[in-house]
Image (cartoon, rainbow, N blue to C red):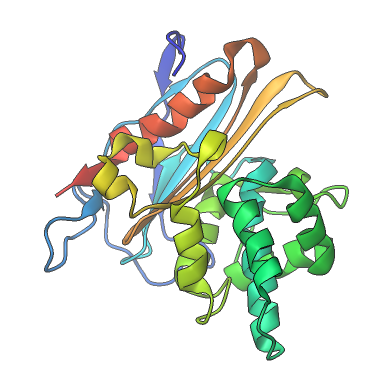
Length: 272
């Protein structure tokens, strides 16, 4: 994590029921995820999130039990997904195969595993073509009830989303709409096994025991077009989802964005 995050400001949180979000959630309160019978679980809490002022930063958190969605004041603002979208591409491929009565062979499963665990780009290119390119992104919007998402220039990494839609996408993956009931456990297992450079995000704030239960997929790229780091984070817990987006000057380095995503975990997650 970079030593200097710079001057921090606190952005006001926006809370409410949103179009496409089921239920009428109660007002947010401290500890607004109610634990179940097993008190040793990871809960969302009403934490204060400080955001750097050196670029664009946005986040959203969704309570999967109540449908309550909260986040930064700009959580409808868009940025690009980069490799985060690979979680959807794998889900779309698996669900479509199941709908057609097909069982993916071992080589395809290995390809999908690599794009999730290791963020393999050639495998993502092949999967994007197989699922119809931009048609797959339009399916994601429809199936997951997204409102701030669109394909851009027929390139998977250019897909734009909001932090709010990342939280909704995480719920869509977790509840089985994305990959279908047959493949959702497999997909979540692969997302829990993300490794290497892409293994960062809110779960870094948890102990290894609890971090291992959290499914993640992230995106990161220092774009030549604007010399900015573009970062996206998605973390899915048993009862919650956190999504985040960032763009900031390239000289700040990759670890600056990693620190931002980790900070969300420290602020919002509580092991009870």
